[in-house]
Amino acid sequence: MQLSRRRFLTLSAALFVANPAQAAPLHRARGQALGATVTILLAHPDAPRIAARAMAEIARLERIFSLYDPGSELSRLNAEARLDAPSFELLDCLTLCDRVHATTAGAFDPTIQPLWASYARHFAAGAAPDAGTLEAERRKVGWHRLRFDAAQVRLEPGMALTLNGVAQGFIADRVSELLKAEGLGGILVDTGELRALGGLPEGGGWPVALASGESLTLRDMALASSAPRGTVFDAGGQVGHILDPRTGLQAAPRWELVSVTSPSAALADALSTAFCLMDREEIDLALAKAPQARLAGLKAQA
Image 1 (cartoon, rainbow, N blue to C red):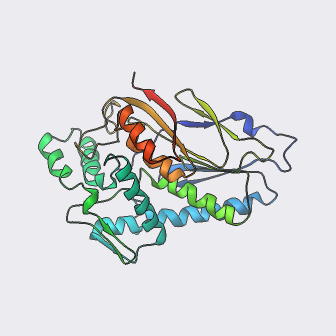
Image 2: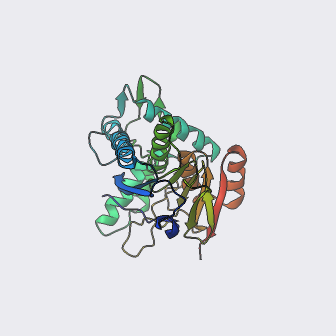
Image 3: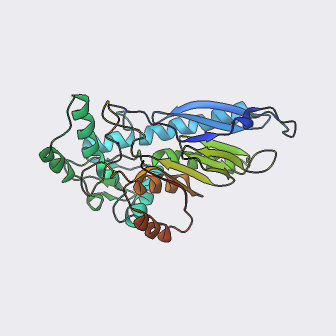
């Protein structure tokens, strides 16, 4: 069962109006990654070639992180409980996950997948999982039981991993780093999370509006947003997709939308996911351990 995510970040419509200050028109390339629409904005005489290079990199990374491609590294790990010779990108992402897990006191835990899959299966069949089922699945969750190094990633029996709370941001970072290595700037990568490589080609930051009402500009910065009900399991739209690894239950009805900025889109993505499960005091404690991250928006549940 593959569920789509709602969008909570909107680029200013003014970006797509011809601006005589630009040396080249703003080119918008579209693609797909992990079930979300990807957009890359840049103004460059060779924009189509650059965008194609970026999309090829996104496709390569999807073959590492996809839960739905049976040949991806992540799918093979979940199927076999081990993955030999993992890619550098997977190890790098897992290292970040380890850091965010500690920073958020366990609220961010990618081993939540067995529990998430149980919710998806039961609601697809028309009924919520019962307490006994949830407790059985919750016992399969535990980041401390994952082992990884350059030789192998290992899961204990019954475990499974999802990187959906961090991979879109991670992919935005990787694409930005690829383009930066080619000497490029003035680019915005939108994988569902945003990563600005420089600012607008004609100067200034990239203008972004959040669904919670805040507006900001991005320059050499990333922005990620998460919402407990951004994706839901039930037809009534009440059972959100962000589950608490500590209880097995959906996020408490605290926040409607959480947005985080950071130089790293992966870090912002992971933190915004975890913050949906945390109260304001816990969020502030986590941010004190991640000084490069900032809370860009926090909308309480109505």
